[in-house]
Length: 365
Ligand SMILES: Cc1cc2nc3c(=O)[nH]c(=O)nc-3n(C[C@H](O)[C@H](O)[C@H](O)COP(=O)(O)O)c2cc1C
Image 1 (cartoon, helix red, strand yellow):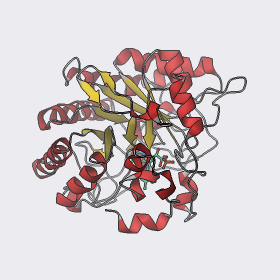
Image 2: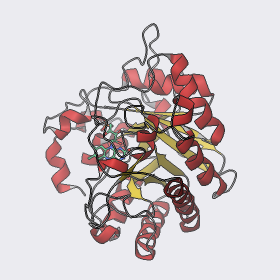
Image 3: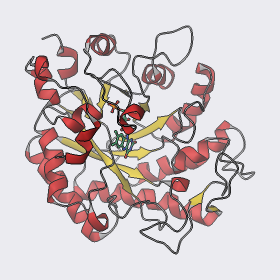
Image 4: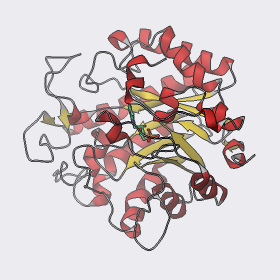
């Protein structure tokens, strides 16, 4: 089979995956009052039953009053929500799949006084947006400590419910990434300063998660160089800077890096064809997930503007996977619109694959 490399097993610690296909985390806002229902369980089960090796859930928020920005985003702390998540885990396991929750705090992406807690302002490293506009409040050391322990508590709950791994959302300009980014983190204490100082919050979150899960339970860390607030911003301009950014996170206890890019085929730096996952694996020695327009010809920002992405062939991806540039392959929109996407590839029915039409978001099943 041409796509053989995608369907090789992968094991790390207690996680054993049937293949290399990972469903990328995608927010759905379909959990009323933050509680995922039967439909959420079925949505993930449908993909797990169709040759998706690992599901990473939509972002699900930790136990902080300003962690969420929408009442329909699932939380990961109320007894009702955790009971809902347990049903999802059981549904995915019933068809032989594996699943990890993506633990999330949106930071300043939340407008002040937003639901579900309108009394509360947002929280962020410094209380200023990247454009210098005041929003929310700078987190005190106590806020930071409480947030770190809320991540730890969520990781513990994930193990108790039966999840197979956890992913920490450190990407895309949300709270952890706001700490990484000098434009938003002007702190002068140990959580600010140079690149290493700015990774300290992320490091402590990773350590807290690590301490609350068994030693062989994989901790996945998602990061991106780009920010949704400014697509041209980048945390690292050179491989050396990327190495300095990743080293403290890796040492804090990451098992797998999820290197979020918009187009997996683009080199991260001049002079090498390696993409972000490729560099991450090379620099840290840890397994890496690539992601970004797999199976499609244009990125997901276009999709948010209503543009259709045409399907594209997988040969470049498979060559790179075969060459061990990265270990796992994150698939977003293609799996959102077609639960059978991976089955069609497995059964060499590629001619049945469809273009991605953002209208799919309206009828998610
Ligand atoms: C509707 C939608 C919701 C998303 N929500 C999240 C999210 O909750 N957490 C996250 O890390 N990324 C999120 N993303 C980004 C995806 O995980 C993925 O990185 C991106 O869509 C690129 O993959 P693709 O080109 O295969 O779609 C979202 C993307 C889409 C399209």
